[in-house]
Length: 314
Image (cartoon, rainbow, N blue to C red; front, side, top):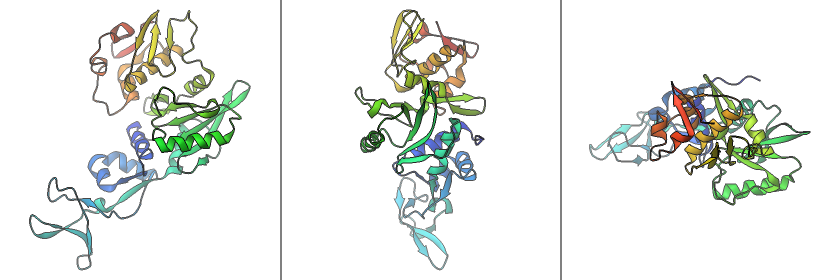
């Protein structure tokens, strides 16, 4: 199976659009903020042109907000009036465009980077898909992809759709954001996993950490033997190294700790610090561990670093 070559930053933009209430992006936003990423998504067929926008940004009067363009038959352009200057202004072509995310194409891309095969199956229209299965013990586990799972109504609908499946096999639900309430659970023992936590960067490629998906379902993560020097809770809010316990409440800090714990479990002694930070969030301002853990100092007792690498002090 061929994985579509696409920068990770571009993939993250597609993932963000996938999680919007409506999976679309104004052309003006693409032109202003995501020129390179937008072009790649369009070239790869992830974004396609949709309806003409009924409101556009007023670029002639700074801070004026949105205006309604009108069609000028004489000039054959859309225009709006500049009230400060008293004349009509042509609307840039990109401001009129709306780009829609091709959801089916994006779902298949998630399937590709997970190394799964078969045709994705819609379980809940536009919100939940079954994207394949992988061996688990003597059976198989199902992988689902959910959209807007952290939104209250969406979660309820996804919960009901999963409940109707009957739980014949174990399953893990991947989503951009997952509910973080203490008592949030899925039916039939299905587990949730954030796509941010599940991504692995390898040079200029990225893929899903299928070992992590397996550990989420088998309970390997967070259930390390007491004699092991490293123990972590399932969501990495608590980690114990060499008998000392550390607590993390921030989502991004828990993601970073998870990356280091999983690397240690795979036998990787060191991780490149910049890659770890990029795995947590490519657009983060923090370019060092000190900035990332700003406000607390005990992280240095947990994490070793130097020469561009970092590791658990296990």
